[in-house]
Image (cartoon, rainbow, N blue to C red; front, side, top):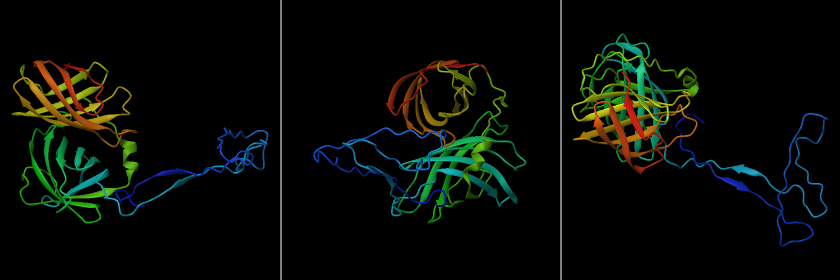
Length: 288
């Protein structure tokens, strides 16, 4: 099944009654070992007088009528500047919410950005806020409206989008691109004393690349093992920062939610409220 096709999985267990006591149902552990060789190793057999064989099986159900989604790896072409394979984008969708981390692939400009938006199922449009991170040289921010194909395999930059975004056509590609998910954590921006943009570290070891523009904040968080990463996009109001966040698909398990942070100084913020979702960092400190 191609990535993004609509599917739902449900597990079923078929259990047979005990042959001697029809009112009970039994489950038995079974462990296969390669030695000594057992010609029946591919079968689960229960050698008990009060048991039945076979007694259970797991089935997988695929529902082709489920809603498709955008989760996956995408490549963006910039037809306005005749650049193919300009950037690679790691996209995660949770219900109607969509997050991505994008970075330079073959584009002549160096960039890394994140975005957050809410998809409209009725007209298959995705308006998003996007912002560059100090992981790349570009420092741009804006709004983008993407028009999604009926099969959710193509996205096209639509009317109402900022012209500064370098990309016009997105296409889904196989997920083996995830094997190349590595991030150069060296900051590329020069920042001032009161500028929150830069590299931050959480009390749980997660490293954050943060970019800001006016009252908007954008970040990419990567844990110490480089196995889990998430995108955050939010709004700064005084010393309160409200952030929508979502794990991008490099993570084995994916969560999303909303948090409220309190900015104690340009170098320190604490998470004061997990509005929804399991967020593990409780305190962030700027390190560069």
